[in-house]
Image 1 (cartoon, rainbow, N blue to C red):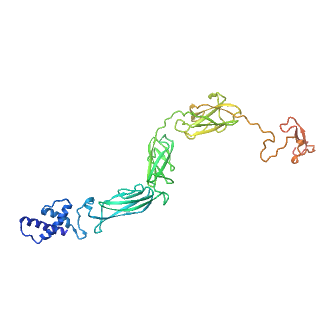
Image 2: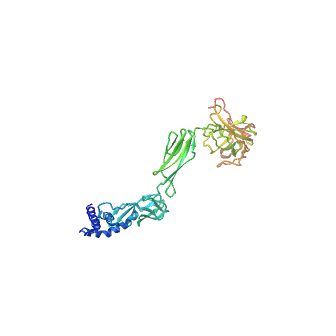
Amino acid sequence: MRAVYAALPVATTYHRLHEEGGPSPSGVGLATRLEPVARFMSRTMNRKLSRGVTLSLALISILSCSENGITGSDGISTDDIDADANRVATVTVMLASSAIGVGDTTRATATLLDYHNRPLTRIVTWSTNNASVANVDSTGLVTGVAAGTAEITATRGLKSGSATITVTGIGATGTGSVASVAVSLAATSLSPGQTTQATATTYDSANNVLTGRTISWASSNISVATVSAAGLVTAVAPGTSQITATSEGKSGSAAIAVTTAQITNPGRVTDLKVIAIDSTGVTLSFTQVDDGTGQPANYDVRYAPPPIAWGSATSTTTGTCAVPIVGTVIGSPLSCKVLGLTPSTAYDFQLIAFRGTLNFNAVFGLLSNVVSATTNASASPPPPGSVEPAGMTPITERPFSALNEAGWTDQASPYLTIVSDATAPKSPPGVIQMLFPAGFLDG
């Protein structure tokens, strides 16, 4: 600051003596020597030199610096790039990490020096020569996009510096970090008590799907809907809530609306069909419907000789179609089998969806379409010896008295004899007859 005070009298004296036309004092030599510098500074700063007044301004700007040490403001804005053109000597870029994975980030920093190797605090412009590999934001944050290399450059005025970043593909040095999370809901509107599944998909910065990432779930309004650790959303009360999934600090959400249940009659099955037939059973299939409250309906399946009349038809009591059939998931297929049918007989089948309890408070939908099927004929048993179980030896059909294989003999005994009995259901004409006389042990 002493240099500034010394300059002002000299410049002022020069101005006064010059106007009066008097001799120049010893200080005029200093002002004279500074005048060319002042003119240069004035031109540089787009000022017109108008005798001593502008000279005084120029001297203030010059003399505010002493040797290599800055003693005051340099009079140049840190955002004035044109004024910095002759001040910035070098720009050096450093990367916190010179190699990152796809989706990962690192920080780039720029160091600016003047021609005396003194650091300058200036704002730089960041750029990349290959945005398909790595991009950089205005703060110098570098993000890996795809495998390859890119030059990250910092520029101030006419000076710039750069550093090379290497981006490795996913799986080379590790998978990329999560850049975004998308949430989808199987159903976006529920009634209280209903549930739906929320699914989260994680992406890296190149929009590649990342798998195996830990997901945490949250609901913005648990009085409306809750969500489990597995993403199962349960409606609680009418309103709206955001279901949010978070992974590695990134989040995504989807809105769920809970509305008052509109109670109607159960739905009608329109696609009942026969998918298998045997001699005593028929397998049916159909698409499950709503019970009128948003829950899966239950079903009453009946059959009768054609044409079926629902009121007199028989409710199924055997097989997996036994009434009531409990529904599982609305819109999914359900199959079951009706048993206890007569071979070689034609039948009609029909069902109805309901909610509640049969013969108590059941609420019914409309009757389904009718399907028909004829059971197969019953199979006749094979003749002896034609088809025997594995490991069995066929033996010709003969009376007991004629059997002598494997130790069979006709024993002469008063208690065990072989007699003829035409009424015997098996192996006539010979049957074994055992006599138990009075007093026979255990007889």
